[in-house]
Image (cartoon, rainbow, N blue to C red; front, side):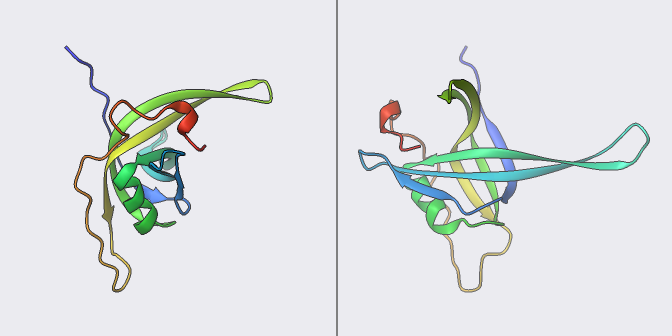
Amino acid sequence: MAGVNKVILVGNLGADPEMRYTAGGTAVCKFRIATTEKFKDRQGNVQERTDWHRITAWGKLAEICGQYLAKGKQVYIEGRLEYGSYEKDGVKHYTTDIIANTMQMLGLAGAGNRVQEPEPPFGPPPGGVPEDDIPF
């Protein structure tokens, strides 16, 4: 039996998305969204915790995200977790990203701004993208 790797998030963009293209011409869009959880602590006081999530979209979905998303927009994201690492200044850093395959804008669109939902699913090209072809 195969495993399941699925993430569903609803949150707000913390900044405008970063749009790039690989050397092979594949669109890549990266952005961060915040989710906020409210809970009661042991004393019964309501507390809030905000988590930040790194999102990466590929191909046509990346182009749509780059064109229509902006800081503050609320979005629904479906995707999968992907773990990675890199070395900087001799220190190994670990990353957790959500690779989006579905995005839906939520809330009110800007005045006169019509947005079509993408035709899910979009994701990295079959077989993935060679690591040396990723621009960041």
